[in-house]
Length: 525
Image (cartoon, rainbow, N blue to C red):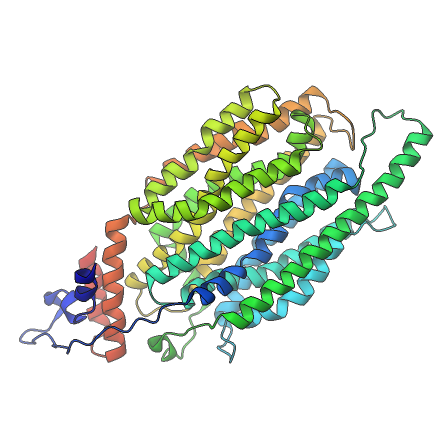
């Protein structure tokens, strides 16, 4: 280890092919200096990681509970609910590149270029989030109410999450430090999902929410049901208030505890990269396209499970009062295994972790599809599924920085594209999830879903089972096949790391010409 570090801390010129030097020109001998690496402290990493919790806490509550809330609490008809979910997610997807564009043209301030977006979006986001879980007295305009505030909240949380995701590239120039900070972040984010599930599930679960046995229920039963619905609505508001408070606390910790860094050679860059030129360069980068294609399908698989899990447990498995505890089992298992996956990808490589981690969900989804309703077996499957969820959380955000490093080697004079990389990755996954949720909710309407019914028609139960088991299995298998095309393995990653260190040193010293950089990069290919 010491030998390797010493080799990397030597002359940057020694890492460049000798063929790029002019005839008769001798390599510049740079005096060896002890390499000074500014490492992130544990406190810095924790403050950075805490910033990932707001997106996950609110996203988990919305992902797991919004569908059943709209159908059974707000009593929106399934067709209108499908419109809310699809348009809301589609708009959420569109806002990611829009916010990425705005960030890419924003100027560096005293707080940085990314941190002001996080700071100023937070107060408005928590107001919009609270109003999503409020049931207005009027019934005619309910669909517009939920669609409006859902879209507003998704826009504001995007103004938080896109710059926060891009911040990964600006907390350190060291790849090992970024990977370590990403592991901290993923652990806290999965903890955030546990927290969101626990708060939303347990508070709402305490409210008495009886179902309606049939459409001809007596007036007395309907009156009691109305009283119970009001209690459930208040429980959702209480949970929203608690989650909004967590959002604010985490945003404050992130703002006070993390300093956005700016590389010295980027400081010399005075001309802003035009957004559409940057977008064209990013979308023509092969490793990025292959990475987002693979994770598009695997993320879509887990989003299908997330969006329909509450209804699946309630009506197909018959565990009306247990689904929030099953969610906790999944998320707790995922939280515990995040550090294990971080060790695994460091030891065996990220592509290997993708294949093993994500494919491990397939046998358990098959088991759920084939087994009869059994609570104990369902808990075992939930714990095992959490292991795969952890891999799905960690790996995309751990691999994106590698793609960006590869891009910087091929385009060494292009800066400011990080928000584009992160925002368009999120765009594709969110848009696909919007389509899937809209179609899945609409399919429930076509199969005869009964709002707040004690049971559902057999066709509804079968549809829910397909949405939670077979459809995700097919999507996972397609995603894993696409990952075979992803070119950045561990050897390529190590080569990129050494070349980036060389380029940074040469940039700082000003001793390398643009054509030399270009020829160096091509020689690596």
